[in-house]
Image (tube, rainbow, N blue to C red; front, side, top):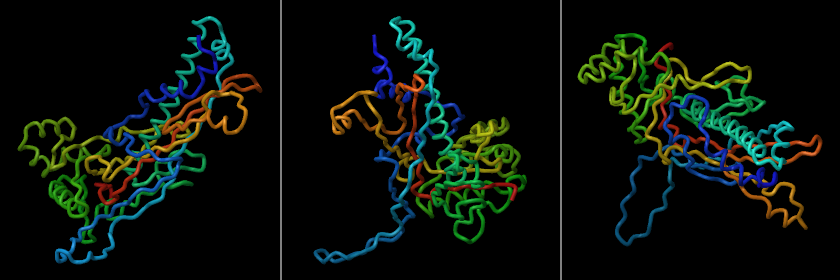
Length: 365
């Protein structure tokens, strides 16, 4: 039968926090939540890529090399999002863990596991919502209490990915006029032509073709009532049927994937459901890969055998291990006697090629 120290040690509890599903709706490609780059601590640098369309210059074979300055790449320092929380377990949990009765000890272990899963849900909720904010707003905002915000109002901490103004709202990317030149709420608007202009602009600006459109509540209704869109969809009966049912079909207007994002929401500090996704918002992104997007995971030291007494400081260090991303451990307190359960996460979604993301407002302007 395990001792209480063995049950609560970080290595035993870590497996539980790595295997639980999230609580908030997640409409996003799983690749957005796949760790692509581990970093030490909570600080990192990433390469922001603006793009470079210059050509290499010819020299005679055997001639000295030409010195050039590589353009469009800059090193951006960032602080990762770090969360660290704790709960105190009821005395009954400790009584069960200390019991010689295996069934009672199992009940104690199950309660520790349940609370660990609750931590994991909270952390995954934040990861998903940070991704949503990055895609919908081009930034992530927190207030002074560390609560994620749905806009910049009241922000004490801002993580801005530098999506340019021309890639937002009506998408005047080259200053020669808006791609979204007329509201999608008007049936006569030629949305098909706008999407053709957008897919062309994406290639011209960065070379990244659009793969997925994440859209808000009103968008499917706009498309299903639009004259040009209906004419386009009529060529493929399955598309026409899908639109008639209020679902935007994949492949419509040359966009490989259409995904409803309006169901993503979270509960704010007042207990109200909130979202970053506007009803008239559509964000267009390339296929997710590490050339334009990363999910960074930081690390933090955690104790191993809690309460162990060592001969000196160096011996104590041997009892410390580094946990990456989500972490989880607990220890026995003495005043009052109980169990303090701690868990946290260190991570950051990063848009490395901000011009590859298009954050459009298609109506209401």
